[in-house]
Amino acid sequence: MGTSEERLRILKMLEEGTITADEAARLLQALSAGQKAGGVKAGGREPRWLRVRITDMDTGKNKVSINIPMGLVKTGIRMGARFVPGDADIDYQELIEALQSGEMGKILEVEDEEQGERVEIWAE
Image (spheres, rainbow, N blue to C red):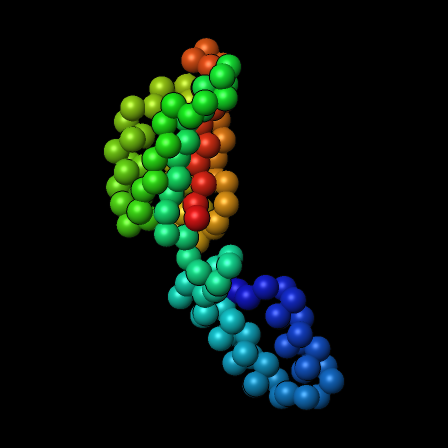
């Protein structure tokens, strides 16, 4: 569904009599449909890259920096999930859903104290 501000604006127009109940219903339905069809994302576009960075916590230097096209991400997450230790506290389905919803920005940050590494994942 659209943002709460957009929904409130439609309801306010209905309350003031600017639009009819049928028009309000159509506008609310259009907001909902636009979001399901991949409506406007942060910055007006959908994320195109998944960026993964592994940093050495002692030196602050990047060990790994990978940029993956979003088209390959879902398959990559499923393949990579096989190599993660069983005691890792990561919900891969939640990660996939966040990416499919078009979220932008930092998605995951994990620190491995034993290895002295920080893993950061974000969508741009």
